[in-house]
Image 1 (cartoon, rainbow, N blue to C red):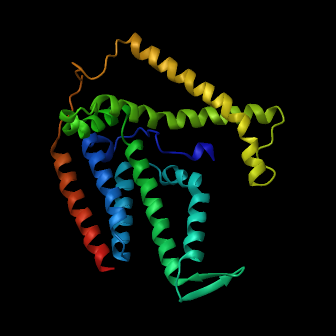
Image 2 (cartoon, rainbow, N blue to C red):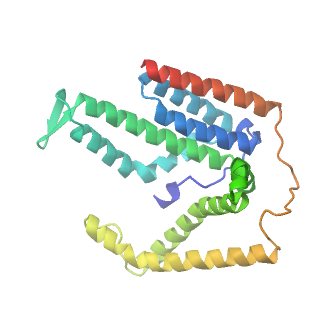
Image 3 (cartoon, helix red, strand yellow):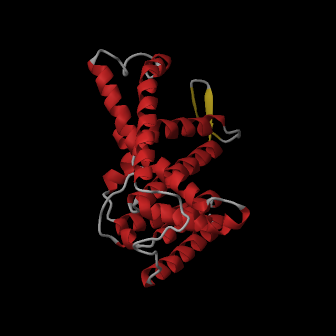
Length: 267
């Protein structure tokens, strides 16, 4: 399950999505996430799913690899669906299970919530899978530039967010190594109830935090050795420019998001 986390990883490929400007991809991803929360009708979700499928095809990221990230939140999805199905008030009872009544309105809410979470995870994964760390940092810094006059450190915030995002697969790999090492020494992480499994993970947290602080210290030392002093006076070897394909992508994204929201109000 630890290897199923795809958020924060980069998948190298030569695709139209990889060649897009990172600023366009970041703003389009934020607009997509906002649109997912705005729409509520069936047709709106259908267009959102169709748009996501088109982006996946354009990114050339293998579908099994992309949807592998959903395994890590499968329990949360099932738990959320169960809560909405059985605890949404209503008189339109569909079926009963163990004394709990499932209503039609609850099933509808559960379906919308499940689709929303899936689209959010897939959309976020597509951004990081098609954008390198440096490109993502530049895109976040560009998005925060309008807030510089009020004292917002755009470059520092962008750097911290990108490092935190890229540390997800690193810490996941480190956690997997620690669990395998402790399992080889007799630790049991699979048997027992939920409380026992939670207690078995406590000894893993200490070496994980130690490793995280050690990696953070090594990263800080490496940045200082390369004379990193923040964004003041910083130049770029490849300045970010918008090309014709980027303007086309902006127009297509704006049209798609508008259609999603309009269709969501109809269904």
